[in-house]
Image (cartoon, rainbow, N blue to C red; front, side, top):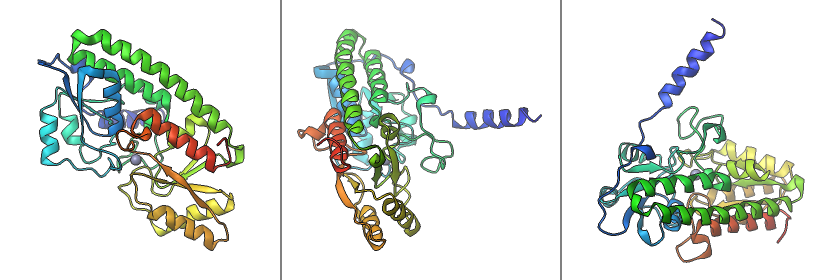
Length: 315
Ligand SMILES: [Zn+2]
């Protein structure tokens, strides 16, 4: 019985978590009269669809630069854009916390994270978005995991538009090589930061995967989701950590209000430690289309360079 009990609990937890979302293998070829109409939630998934689909896709993004996916609610216009799509691509893992029902019930909607093995997912102690044992959805900051999202995107497009399978395969193969180079670049920049300064303090815990892959310690003032507001105690605890460790810089994020980070800076100052804002990181949204940070590769590069420079690494 001693062994059986934890086993039973595990089984119950696992079955409660298994949700009825659409798998790539469930997709059917679409009746196409032109490019594949792809609707995405966050803009990094839009970027992925554009890179892999090339001229064969017409991408509509529901969430642009600076938009927080954790809090985003679909408008009537969004619902129409979802209905009109040949394929919907979204982050999944409860990234789009308020749109889960809408996305998981849709037979054309694919979570690009669905191919990532369970063993590669981070499971924060307190769960995520109020769901116990829920994984951290911010997988794009580990470039090797984003490669898996690219493969899922390729497979989804190939299922919907099988006639262009080889085009999607070629575009993906080229992109995966680019991502390998990016991964190596991030690794080398982070290694240039002195060991004791490899600490990343940001507005919310979006950088857990980045930290694991590239060897940093990470602290966020707001928890993994932005849905929970940071309390005074969180701010004080983080300020103490920053002051004790003499961390030179902490970071603001493009899609999260700056006030929590400013509160930590003020509280650290009250403890006699001056910490500065190391720059703005893109966390849950790419920058504006047409700027270098408007692509996934450009966004990761911007973040990495900003972090390395502010923490005493290569400029
Ligand atoms: Zn987030």
